[in-house]
Length: 485
Image 1 (cartoon, rainbow, N blue to C red):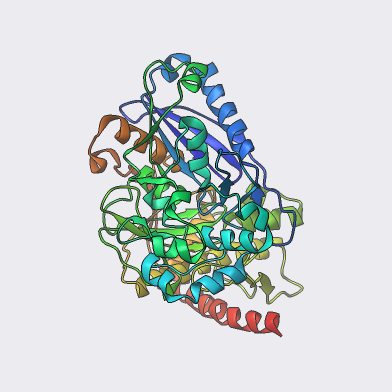
Image 2: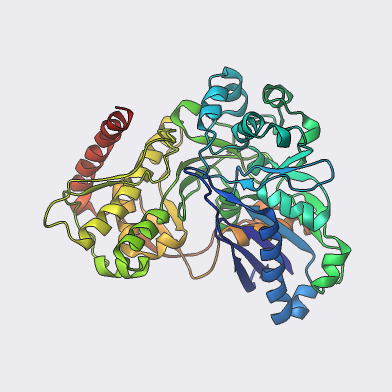
């Protein structure tokens, strides 16, 4: 048996699979986010440990025999978070999360240093880890002076599980400290933020062994043998392993809290000016590109609260039959935007409201806005040298058939829907745990799921969606100019 642990923003999920990759069971535990100031987003790392104990404890209660047979654990987690420990391993402050934008000034300052883009292959985004540490140095110098280690969220969970300071390439590529081509820390970039390699974890590949589970925890959960912990992956790379998106040109779209258009690459293809992420993949000798929008299902959740309806009710209300975009346009920039704008200050908007703009019209506009933001990502990927012929859909938003039709038509790409099953980050993490424990062939283990159905672009609405997309594109500079005025 193999266990995948996915530390998400809103919950921690534990998934148990057998050696045939059949999902035996899963359990989760909820997490909350603190927003003490405008633009801030934090979590207490102690809550991750509590959530892990709850989720794995539930599996141990319900499936004690299967949990006893676990030989490998894989880790996945939300990326970029700054978990700051002292030299004794104690947490110094709440973790600053991926969607925290407080360090936008520091990010711009680092990005003005040409070494960062040249070495990492990426813009220094406000959500990345390095500018957060520069912010801490500037605003909390007493904490910065005590920094012993800086860990990404899933790697703090690993520290609790194994007692070791270890990370891997895919997650570390999102720190702005990794030499992405060489798959190693850049001493030059660390020094530029007044840190050193000694304050970073050791690096392994995602499918390699990255520690061994502490005997006390193994006993607590009824695991009988030595249990290795894989290097693991950042959440999107882990999802790619779960989806079998590992061969060059394979791609998926994730409609989760954030939105991702992810393409696997067999070589390093940076183009930072496009705001496309060029990161290491979780498997040796592979890389990936991805465009990221900061609010995907988050936009529908936000609108649902305003309308006092659930997201499912709103989705049901618009039905399954795709309509041509109406006069209402929605910009989904509720917490800024990453690809292609790299703009932490921009905010969302409804444009074109009229007396006839009812709730379903506005719901459709929200879904279309996310689809058009993903189209922006597709154009950015194309500018970076990646052409896609089809994509696979994952994430909670992919349960809405209307939303998938809108995305397929906006991108003019067929979207494959996987057969029933959970092929997300927890499953990918379990696969990495299997690889670390068995030394198997990554391509033989990380295979794509069967396709249950394909959502094709609706040609009848292609012209209308293209026209609406061009209107959407014209609105960003207009809104940006108003916000700067």
